[in-house]
Image 1 (tube, protein in one colour):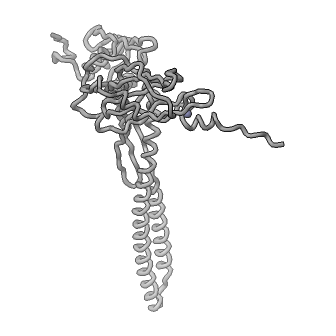
Image 2 (image 1 turned 30 degrees about the vertical axis):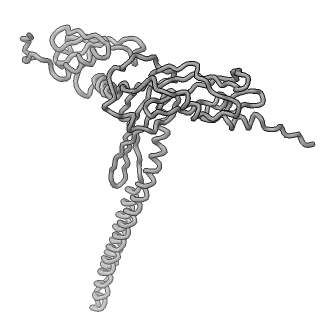
Length: 370
Ligand SMILES: [Zn+2]
């Protein structure tokens, strides 16, 4: 136990404790050179880059003995950076969706009923593989600032594999079926990385946000108009009163100059207050990402062949995903335009594409007019 006078208790101060925890959690190393003096090795940014070596001193009086050391206290750039990083780490959580049936009955039948192929073709599942599909759930905080401040929480979930919005949020976020570990270890389905989901989520949120902002804006202006009307009435009454006094004064043969000055003053005051109100009538919207939850959800990746019924020959291959959570087949991707589609056509050249791409490919070329 420490008997050092500078640290009378046996446990270190909260900031010191945070620092040790932080360094250990992030994969760095700390060494207490002497009481309240630490040598730290911080891992590089995002796991890449060179590790950073820092000597930190908790006691300002010890600074002269350790040239080149940094003082550890709240508000210093280094401690601020570490605290922010720690908060950000806490905002990102990964869990597994458990309790799903990964060998459901009749998936091929269901797929055949869902997919629309031209007559004379059928689908055959060549391989069905359960895999983990990351579902990224973003929580955004929108703040509307005008004459008052209001906040909204917006949630968007994106299937990272397809880059599509997940509509069944409630089923996805079922707390009773989330675990820190999966029931069965599964490989990750191919996906373009979590970073690609963020712009999709943001785009969806901005759309919702502009609808919300319109509502706030309308309410704000109704409020503002009512207030402007009240101000207008208030000053009109005041002016009328002063004019009445001026008339009486004039009748008594008094000088009415001071009344004119008072009316002028009232007009200036009214303009000032109305201007102030109109400035508050501007609506500002701030959007920030609060939390990110990644749910690794098992789904079946179905590799299928499109087969001509008469000859039995394969004319193309399609990849489908079966989601056991909602017991449905997700739209496949058109090999040509990459748009999601359930319906496929075969071009004259024998390519398997979506109906839109097929109509472009098979459009008769126009004769050039001379
Ligand atoms: Zn297409």
